[in-house]
Length: 467
Image (tube, rainbow, N blue to C red; front, side):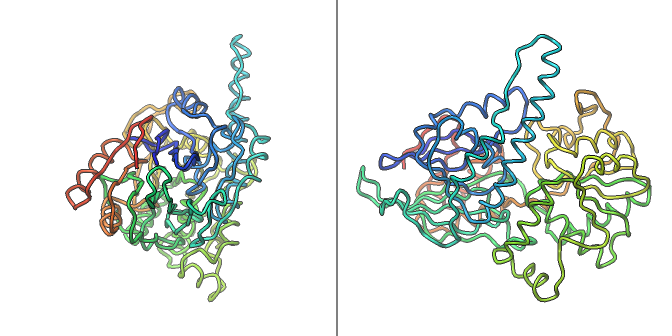
Protein backbone atom coordinates (compact mmCIF):
# COMPACT_ATOMS: atom_id res chain seq x y z
CA UNK A 1 0.00 0.00 0.00
CA UNK A 2 1.37 3.40 -0.92
CA UNK A 3 0.21 6.99 -1.13
CA UNK A 4 1.23 9.63 -3.68
CA UNK A 5 1.00 13.39 -3.03
CA UNK A 6 -0.30 15.76 -5.71
CA UNK A 7 -1.54 18.83 -3.85
CA UNK A 8 -1.70 20.66 -0.50
CA UNK A 9 1.84 19.50 0.20
CA UNK A 10 3.76 22.25 2.04
CA UNK A 11 0.87 24.55 1.02
CA UNK A 12 -2.79 24.91 1.95
CA UNK A 13 -4.85 24.57 -1.22
CA UNK A 14 -5.44 21.97 -3.92
CA UNK A 15 -5.76 18.93 -1.63
CA UNK A 16 -5.12 15.69 -3.63
CA UNK A 17 -3.63 12.47 -2.23
CA UNK A 18 -3.70 9.25 -4.27
CA UNK A 19 -3.86 5.95 -2.36
CA UNK A 20 -2.81 2.83 -4.25
CA UNK A 21 -3.76 -0.55 -2.76
CA UNK A 22 -4.97 -3.98 -3.94
CA UNK A 23 -4.90 -2.91 -7.58
CA UNK A 24 -7.13 0.09 -6.91
CA UNK A 25 -6.38 3.83 -6.99
CA UNK A 26 -8.39 5.91 -4.51
CA UNK A 27 -8.11 9.70 -4.56
CA UNK A 28 -8.47 11.40 -1.18
CA UNK A 29 -9.93 14.85 -2.01
CA UNK A 30 -9.81 16.60 -5.36
CA UNK A 31 -9.28 20.26 -4.50
CA UNK A 32 -8.68 23.36 -6.52
CA UNK A 33 -5.45 25.31 -6.08
CA UNK A 34 -5.92 28.98 -5.21
CA UNK A 35 -3.08 31.49 -5.29
CA UNK A 36 -0.89 33.22 -7.87
CA UNK A 37 -2.82 33.41 -11.15
CA UNK A 38 0.17 32.24 -13.23
CA UNK A 39 0.42 29.03 -11.14
CA UNK A 40 -3.29 28.51 -10.58
CA UNK A 41 -4.30 27.39 -14.06
CA UNK A 42 -1.42 24.95 -14.56
CA UNK A 43 -1.74 23.35 -11.11
CA UNK A 44 -5.48 22.86 -11.52
CA UNK A 45 -5.38 21.56 -15.09
CA UNK A 46 -2.56 19.03 -14.58
CA UNK A 47 -3.20 16.41 -11.91
CA UNK A 48 0.15 14.61 -12.02
CA UNK A 49 -1.69 11.31 -12.60
CA UNK A 50 -4.14 9.94 -15.16
CA UNK A 51 -7.73 10.64 -14.01
CA UNK A 52 -8.95 7.68 -16.10
CA UNK A 53 -6.96 5.34 -13.83
CA UNK A 54 -8.63 6.54 -10.62
CA UNK A 55 -11.20 4.02 -9.36
CA UNK A 56 -12.90 6.16 -6.68
CA UNK A 57 -12.73 9.50 -4.88
CA UNK A 58 -13.24 9.95 -1.14
CA UNK A 59 -14.12 13.54 -0.32
CA UNK A 60 -13.53 15.00 3.15
CA UNK A 61 -15.80 18.04 2.70
CA UNK A 62 -17.24 20.54 0.23
CA UNK A 63 -14.80 23.46 0.46
CA UNK A 64 -13.46 24.27 -3.00
CA UNK A 65 -9.81 23.68 -2.06
CA UNK A 66 -10.83 20.07 -1.32
CA UNK A 67 -13.64 19.45 -3.85
CA UNK A 68 -13.40 22.12 -6.55
CA UNK A 69 -11.45 20.13 -9.15
CA UNK A 70 -13.88 17.21 -9.30
CA UNK A 71 -15.56 18.36 -12.55
CA UNK A 72 -12.14 18.67 -14.18
CA UNK A 73 -11.30 15.13 -13.02
CA UNK A 74 -14.51 13.92 -14.68
CA UNK A 75 -13.81 16.01 -17.78
CA UNK A 76 -10.45 14.25 -18.10
CA UNK A 77 -11.90 10.75 -17.88
CA UNK A 78 -12.68 9.78 -14.27
CA UNK A 79 -15.82 7.68 -14.16
CA UNK A 80 -16.03 6.17 -10.67
CA UNK A 81 -17.97 6.86 -7.47
CA UNK A 82 -17.35 9.94 -5.30
CA UNK A 83 -17.90 9.02 -1.64
CA UNK A 84 -18.77 11.75 0.89
CA UNK A 85 -21.26 12.47 3.67
CA UNK A 86 -24.89 13.16 2.83
CA UNK A 87 -24.74 16.90 3.70
CA UNK A 88 -21.66 17.22 1.45
CA UNK A 89 -23.68 15.83 -1.47
CA UNK A 90 -26.23 18.64 -0.99
CA UNK A 91 -23.54 21.31 -0.58
CA UNK A 92 -21.64 20.24 -3.70
CA UNK A 93 -24.73 20.92 -5.79
CA UNK A 94 -24.30 24.63 -5.04
CA UNK A 95 -20.53 24.84 -4.59
CA UNK A 96 -19.54 23.24 -7.89
CA UNK A 97 -22.18 25.08 -9.93
CA UNK A 98 -20.97 28.36 -8.44
CA UNK A 99 -17.34 27.47 -9.17
CA UNK A 100 -18.14 26.70 -12.81
CA UNK A 101 -20.13 29.94 -13.17
CA UNK A 102 -17.20 32.00 -11.80
CA UNK A 103 -14.76 30.34 -14.19
CA UNK A 104 -17.03 30.80 -17.19
CA UNK A 105 -17.50 34.51 -16.43
CA UNK A 106 -13.79 35.10 -15.78
CA UNK A 107 -12.77 33.41 -19.03
CA UNK A 108 -15.40 35.43 -20.87
CA UNK A 109 -13.91 38.63 -19.43
CA UNK A 110 -10.32 37.61 -20.20
CA UNK A 111 -11.16 36.50 -23.75
CA UNK A 112 -12.65 39.90 -24.54
CA UNK A 113 -9.24 41.42 -23.78
CA UNK A 114 -7.36 38.69 -25.64
CA UNK A 115 -9.54 39.10 -28.71
CA UNK A 116 -8.81 42.84 -28.81
CA UNK A 117 -5.07 42.14 -28.51
CA UNK A 118 -5.09 39.33 -31.08
CA UNK A 119 -4.06 36.74 -28.46
CA UNK A 120 -5.18 33.07 -28.39
CA UNK A 121 -8.43 32.55 -26.49
CA UNK A 122 -8.61 30.32 -23.40
CA UNK A 123 -11.22 27.89 -22.07
CA UNK A 124 -12.53 27.56 -18.51
CA UNK A 125 -11.06 24.74 -16.44
CA UNK A 126 -14.54 23.22 -16.55
CA UNK A 127 -18.09 24.28 -17.31
CA UNK A 128 -21.55 23.89 -15.82
CA UNK A 129 -22.02 20.96 -18.20
CA UNK A 130 -19.06 19.18 -16.55
CA UNK A 131 -20.63 19.82 -13.14
CA UNK A 132 -23.89 18.24 -14.33
CA UNK A 133 -21.94 15.09 -15.24
CA UNK A 134 -20.15 15.06 -11.87
CA UNK A 135 -23.00 15.47 -9.38
CA UNK A 136 -24.76 12.11 -10.14
CA UNK A 137 -21.48 10.33 -9.32
CA UNK A 138 -21.63 11.37 -5.64
CA UNK A 139 -22.65 8.74 -3.10
CA UNK A 140 -23.73 10.02 0.32
CA UNK A 141 -22.81 7.93 3.37
CA UNK A 142 -24.01 8.62 6.91
CA UNK A 143 -21.61 9.35 9.75
CA UNK A 144 -20.46 6.25 11.66
CA UNK A 145 -21.70 3.96 8.89
CA UNK A 146 -19.12 1.59 7.40
CA UNK A 147 -19.23 0.42 3.78
CA UNK A 148 -17.05 -1.86 1.66
CA UNK A 149 -15.62 -0.04 -1.36
CA UNK A 150 -15.98 -1.81 -4.72
CA UNK A 151 -17.95 -4.53 -2.84
CA UNK A 152 -14.53 -5.63 -1.59
CA UNK A 153 -14.53 -6.87 2.04
CA UNK A 154 -10.81 -6.02 2.22
CA UNK A 155 -11.41 -2.22 1.82
CA UNK A 156 -13.78 -0.68 4.36
CA UNK A 157 -14.64 3.03 4.67
CA UNK A 158 -16.15 4.81 7.66
CA UNK A 159 -16.82 8.56 8.05
CA UNK A 160 -16.47 10.29 11.44
CA UNK A 161 -17.27 13.89 12.38
CA UNK A 162 -14.34 16.24 11.56
CA UNK A 163 -15.95 19.29 13.23
CA UNK A 164 -14.78 21.67 10.49
CA UNK A 165 -17.91 22.59 8.51
CA UNK A 166 -21.31 21.04 7.85
CA UNK A 167 -20.71 17.58 6.38
CA UNK A 168 -16.95 17.49 7.01
CA UNK A 169 -15.57 14.04 7.75
CA UNK A 170 -12.54 12.19 8.99
CA UNK A 171 -11.97 9.32 6.56
CA UNK A 172 -11.28 6.00 8.29
CA UNK A 173 -10.06 3.17 6.06
CA UNK A 174 -9.48 -0.40 7.19
CA UNK A 175 -7.65 -2.35 4.50
CA UNK A 176 -6.29 -5.87 4.19
CA UNK A 177 -3.19 -5.30 2.05
CA UNK A 178 -2.93 -8.24 -0.36
CA UNK A 179 0.77 -7.56 -0.91
CA UNK A 180 1.72 -8.57 2.63
CA UNK A 181 -1.54 -9.93 4.06
CA UNK A 182 -1.62 -7.36 6.88
CA UNK A 183 -4.69 -5.41 7.99
CA UNK A 184 -3.83 -1.70 8.01
CA UNK A 185 -5.78 1.29 9.24
CA UNK A 186 -5.38 4.69 7.60
CA UNK A 187 -7.12 7.88 8.78
CA UNK A 188 -7.31 11.17 6.88
CA UNK A 189 -8.49 14.21 8.83
CA UNK A 190 -9.30 16.42 5.84
CA UNK A 191 -9.62 19.77 7.60
CA UNK A 192 -9.87 19.10 11.33
CA UNK A 193 -12.14 21.39 13.32
CA UNK A 194 -12.01 22.81 16.83
CA UNK A 195 -13.94 21.93 19.94
CA UNK A 196 -16.78 24.13 21.24
CA UNK A 197 -17.27 26.14 18.05
CA UNK A 198 -20.70 27.46 17.00
CA UNK A 199 -23.02 25.27 14.90
CA UNK A 200 -20.76 22.27 14.24
CA UNK A 201 -20.29 19.26 16.51
CA UNK A 202 -16.90 18.59 18.10
CA UNK A 203 -14.45 16.51 16.03
CA UNK A 204 -14.36 12.78 16.64
CA UNK A 205 -11.30 11.59 18.53
CA UNK A 206 -9.65 8.65 16.77
CA UNK A 207 -8.77 5.99 19.32
CA UNK A 208 -6.41 3.82 17.30
CA UNK A 209 -4.83 3.72 13.83
CA UNK A 210 -1.46 2.85 12.35
CA UNK A 211 -1.31 5.64 9.77
CA UNK A 212 -2.61 9.20 9.98
CA UNK A 213 -2.76 11.84 7.25
CA UNK A 214 -3.35 15.11 9.14
CA UNK A 215 -3.71 18.76 8.19
CA UNK A 216 -1.27 21.33 9.61
CA UNK A 217 -2.69 24.73 8.55
CA UNK A 218 -2.21 26.30 12.00
CA UNK A 219 0.57 23.96 13.11
CA UNK A 220 2.62 26.85 14.51
CA UNK A 221 -0.15 29.09 15.87
CA UNK A 222 -2.78 29.26 18.61
CA UNK A 223 -6.30 30.70 18.31
CA UNK A 224 -8.13 33.03 20.65
CA UNK A 225 -11.26 31.63 22.28
CA UNK A 226 -14.48 32.15 20.35
CA UNK A 227 -16.05 34.00 23.33
CA UNK A 228 -13.20 36.53 23.35
CA UNK A 229 -13.58 36.82 19.58
CA UNK A 230 -17.24 37.81 19.84
CA UNK A 231 -16.36 40.57 22.31
CA UNK A 232 -13.56 41.73 19.99
CA UNK A 233 -15.94 41.71 17.00
CA UNK A 234 -18.45 43.79 18.98
CA UNK A 235 -15.74 46.35 19.79
CA UNK A 236 -14.68 46.57 16.12
CA UNK A 237 -18.28 47.13 15.04
CA UNK A 238 -18.90 49.83 17.68
CA UNK A 239 -15.63 51.68 16.96
CA UNK A 240 -16.10 51.64 13.18
CA UNK A 241 -19.76 52.64 13.39
CA UNK A 242 -18.86 55.57 15.68
CA UNK A 243 -16.64 57.03 12.98
CA UNK A 244 -19.26 56.45 10.28
CA UNK A 245 -17.48 53.57 8.54
CA UNK A 246 -18.42 50.26 6.98
CA UNK A 247 -17.25 46.88 8.27
CA UNK A 248 -16.30 44.47 5.48
CA UNK A 249 -15.93 40.78 6.36
CA UNK A 250 -14.67 38.53 3.54
CA UNK A 251 -15.90 35.05 4.43
CA UNK A 252 -16.21 31.68 2.77
CA UNK A 253 -19.84 31.13 1.78
CA UNK A 254 -19.74 27.69 3.37
CA UNK A 255 -19.11 27.56 7.09
CA UNK A 256 -17.54 30.89 7.99
CA UNK A 257 -20.48 33.01 6.80
CA UNK A 258 -22.94 30.97 8.89
CA UNK A 259 -20.67 31.28 11.97
CA UNK A 260 -20.43 35.06 11.55
CA UNK A 261 -24.23 35.33 11.18
CA UNK A 262 -24.62 33.25 14.35
CA UNK A 263 -22.24 35.51 16.33
CA UNK A 264 -23.77 38.76 15.03
CA UNK A 265 -27.22 37.47 15.95
CA UNK A 266 -26.06 36.81 19.53
CA UNK A 267 -24.39 40.23 19.77
CA UNK A 268 -27.49 41.97 18.44
CA UNK A 269 -29.76 40.13 20.88
CA UNK A 270 -27.46 41.08 23.75
CA UNK A 271 -27.38 44.73 22.55
CA UNK A 272 -23.58 44.59 22.29
CA UNK A 273 -23.57 46.13 18.80
CA UNK A 274 -25.53 49.12 17.47
CA UNK A 275 -28.68 48.64 15.41
CA UNK A 276 -27.00 48.95 12.03
CA UNK A 277 -27.92 46.95 8.89
CA UNK A 278 -26.04 43.69 8.28
CA UNK A 279 -25.86 42.51 4.66
CA UNK A 280 -24.98 38.99 3.51
CA UNK A 281 -23.96 39.75 -0.05
CA UNK A 282 -23.65 36.33 -1.62
CA UNK A 283 -26.35 34.31 -3.41
CA UNK A 284 -24.30 31.19 -2.71
CA UNK A 285 -24.34 31.91 1.04
CA UNK A 286 -28.13 32.18 0.96
CA UNK A 287 -28.45 28.76 -0.70
CA UNK A 288 -25.91 27.12 1.57
CA UNK A 289 -27.59 28.51 4.69
CA UNK A 290 -30.76 26.72 3.59
CA UNK A 291 -28.79 23.45 3.50
CA UNK A 292 -27.76 24.09 7.13
CA UNK A 293 -31.43 24.42 8.05
CA UNK A 294 -32.22 21.09 6.38
CA UNK A 295 -29.48 19.27 8.31
CA UNK A 296 -30.26 20.12 11.93
CA UNK A 297 -29.50 16.56 13.00
CA UNK A 298 -25.76 16.92 12.34
CA UNK A 299 -25.39 20.39 13.93
CA UNK A 300 -24.39 20.77 17.58
CA UNK A 301 -26.82 20.54 20.50
CA UNK A 302 -26.88 24.28 21.22
CA UNK A 303 -27.95 25.10 17.66
CA UNK A 304 -30.59 22.38 17.63
CA UNK A 305 -32.05 23.79 20.85
CA UNK A 306 -32.21 27.27 19.32
CA UNK A 307 -34.18 25.88 16.38
CA UNK A 308 -36.36 23.32 18.07
CA UNK A 309 -36.82 24.52 21.66
CA UNK A 310 -37.03 28.30 21.37
CA UNK A 311 -38.26 28.31 17.73
CA UNK A 312 -35.52 30.87 16.99
CA UNK A 313 -33.77 30.87 13.63
CA UNK A 314 -30.06 31.65 14.18
CA UNK A 315 -29.79 32.66 10.52
CA UNK A 316 -32.52 35.31 10.54
CA UNK A 317 -33.02 38.43 12.68
CA UNK A 318 -34.30 41.96 12.14
CA UNK A 319 -30.96 43.62 11.28
CA UNK A 320 -29.97 40.92 8.79
CA UNK A 321 -30.56 41.28 5.05
CA UNK A 322 -29.68 38.71 2.40
CA UNK A 323 -28.58 40.19 -0.92
CA UNK A 324 -29.25 38.19 -4.08
CA UNK A 325 -29.25 40.39 -7.17
CA UNK A 326 -26.32 42.24 -8.73
CA UNK A 327 -28.34 45.47 -8.58
CA UNK A 328 -28.84 45.14 -4.81
CA UNK A 329 -25.14 44.41 -4.37
CA UNK A 330 -24.11 47.48 -6.40
CA UNK A 331 -26.51 49.65 -4.38
CA UNK A 332 -24.49 48.87 -1.23
CA UNK A 333 -21.64 50.96 -2.62
CA UNK A 334 -23.88 54.03 -2.23
CA UNK A 335 -25.06 53.10 1.26
CA UNK A 336 -24.82 56.08 3.60
CA UNK A 337 -23.81 55.43 7.17
CA UNK A 338 -22.37 52.46 9.04
CA UNK A 339 -23.20 48.90 8.03
CA UNK A 340 -21.69 45.41 8.02
CA UNK A 341 -21.14 43.60 4.71
CA UNK A 342 -20.27 39.90 4.77
CA UNK A 343 -19.29 38.72 1.31
CA UNK A 344 -17.24 36.08 -0.46
CA UNK A 345 -14.66 35.02 -1.35
CA UNK A 346 -12.89 34.43 1.96
CA UNK A 347 -9.40 35.10 0.54
CA UNK A 348 -10.54 38.19 -1.42
CA UNK A 349 -9.69 36.49 -4.72
CA UNK A 350 -13.07 36.34 -6.45
CA UNK A 351 -16.66 37.40 -5.99
CA UNK A 352 -18.49 40.46 -4.74
CA UNK A 353 -16.05 41.25 -1.91
CA UNK A 354 -13.68 42.64 -4.56
CA UNK A 355 -16.21 45.29 -5.61
CA UNK A 356 -16.76 46.29 -1.98
CA UNK A 357 -13.02 46.51 -1.37
CA UNK A 358 -12.53 48.62 -4.47
CA UNK A 359 -15.06 51.11 -3.13
CA UNK A 360 -14.00 51.05 0.53
CA UNK A 361 -10.28 50.29 0.81
CA UNK A 362 -9.11 53.92 0.53
CA UNK A 363 -11.46 55.29 3.21
CA UNK A 364 -9.85 55.37 6.69
CA UNK A 365 -13.26 55.21 8.38
CA UNK A 366 -13.85 51.64 7.15
CA UNK A 367 -12.59 48.39 8.63
CA UNK A 368 -11.70 45.08 6.97
CA UNK A 369 -12.11 42.11 9.33
CA UNK A 370 -10.15 39.01 8.30
CA UNK A 371 -11.74 35.91 9.83
CA UNK A 372 -10.06 33.08 7.90
CA UNK A 373 -6.79 31.76 6.54
CA UNK A 374 -5.27 33.74 3.67
CA UNK A 375 -3.15 31.60 1.34
CA UNK A 376 0.14 32.81 -0.14
CA UNK A 377 -0.23 35.26 -3.06
CA UNK A 378 -3.96 35.89 -2.48
CA UNK A 379 -5.20 39.47 -2.16
CA UNK A 380 -6.18 38.79 1.45
CA UNK A 381 -2.64 37.67 2.28
CA UNK A 382 -1.14 40.77 0.63
CA UNK A 383 -3.40 43.02 2.70
CA UNK A 384 -2.59 41.37 6.04
CA UNK A 385 1.11 41.54 5.17
CA UNK A 386 0.59 45.33 4.88
CA UNK A 387 1.29 45.65 1.18
CA UNK A 388 0.07 48.94 -0.27
CA UNK A 389 -1.02 49.65 -2.89
CA UNK A 390 -2.72 46.39 -3.91
CA UNK A 391 -4.26 45.60 -7.27
CA UNK A 392 -8.03 45.16 -7.48
CA UNK A 393 -9.39 44.47 -10.94
CA UNK A 394 -5.97 45.33 -12.33
CA UNK A 395 -5.76 48.81 -10.80
CA UNK A 396 -3.69 49.89 -7.75
CA UNK A 397 -5.48 50.95 -4.57
CA UNK A 398 -3.89 52.31 -1.39
CA UNK A 399 -4.87 50.39 1.74
CA UNK A 400 -6.19 53.12 4.04
CA UNK A 401 -9.01 51.23 5.76
CA UNK A 402 -8.24 49.65 9.13
CA UNK A 403 -7.43 45.92 8.99
CA UNK A 404 -8.26 43.58 11.87
CA UNK A 405 -7.31 39.89 11.98
CA UNK A 406 -9.46 37.45 13.96
CA UNK A 407 -8.15 33.88 13.74
CA UNK A 408 -10.49 32.80 16.52
CA UNK A 409 -13.16 32.27 13.86
CA UNK A 410 -10.97 29.78 12.07
CA UNK A 411 -12.66 26.40 11.68
CA UNK A 412 -9.22 24.73 11.65
CA UNK A 413 -7.64 23.09 14.68
CA UNK A 414 -4.68 25.10 15.99
CA UNK A 415 -1.30 23.80 17.18
CA UNK A 416 -2.62 22.78 20.60
CA UNK A 417 -5.67 21.03 19.11
CA UNK A 418 -3.55 19.11 16.58
CA UNK A 419 -1.05 17.98 19.20
CA UNK A 420 -3.82 16.87 21.53
CA UNK A 421 -5.63 15.01 18.74
CA UNK A 422 -2.56 13.12 17.47
CA UNK A 423 -1.00 12.22 20.81
CA UNK A 424 -4.21 10.54 22.03
CA UNK A 425 -4.14 8.00 19.18
CA UNK A 426 -2.89 4.53 20.13
CA UNK A 427 -0.71 2.40 17.83
CA UNK A 428 0.30 5.28 15.57
CA UNK A 429 3.29 4.27 13.46
CA UNK A 430 3.47 7.00 10.85
CA UNK A 431 1.99 10.52 10.81
CA UNK A 432 1.98 12.47 7.53
CA UNK A 433 1.42 16.24 7.62
CA UNK A 434 -0.35 17.88 4.68
CA UNK A 435 -2.38 21.05 4.03
CA UNK A 436 0.01 23.45 5.75
CA UNK A 437 2.67 25.88 4.63
CA UNK A 438 6.20 24.59 5.13
CA UNK A 439 7.03 26.52 8.30
CA UNK A 440 3.75 25.50 9.98
CA UNK A 441 4.17 21.83 9.03
CA UNK A 442 7.82 21.64 10.06
CA UNK A 443 7.18 23.36 13.41
CA UNK A 444 4.33 20.97 14.12
CA UNK A 445 6.52 18.01 13.12
CA UNK A 446 9.13 19.03 15.71
CA UNK A 447 6.46 19.34 18.39
CA UNK A 448 4.89 15.96 17.52
CA UNK A 449 8.25 14.18 17.67
CA UNK A 450 8.89 15.84 21.01
CA UNK A 451 5.56 14.47 22.26
CA UNK A 452 6.30 10.83 21.54
CA UNK A 453 5.10 10.34 17.94
CA UNK A 454 7.49 7.81 16.36
CA UNK A 455 7.67 9.03 12.76
CA UNK A 456 6.41 12.29 11.23
CA UNK A 457 6.73 13.05 7.51
CA UNK A 458 6.11 16.31 5.63
CA UNK A 459 5.83 15.26 1.97
CA UNK A 460 6.50 17.42 -1.08
CA UNK A 461 4.53 17.42 -4.34
CA UNK A 462 5.14 14.18 -6.23
CA UNK A 463 6.43 12.21 -3.23
CA UNK A 464 5.37 8.61 -2.62
CA UNK A 465 5.25 6.96 0.82
CA UNK A 466 4.97 3.23 1.46
CA UNK A 467 2.55 2.23 4.22
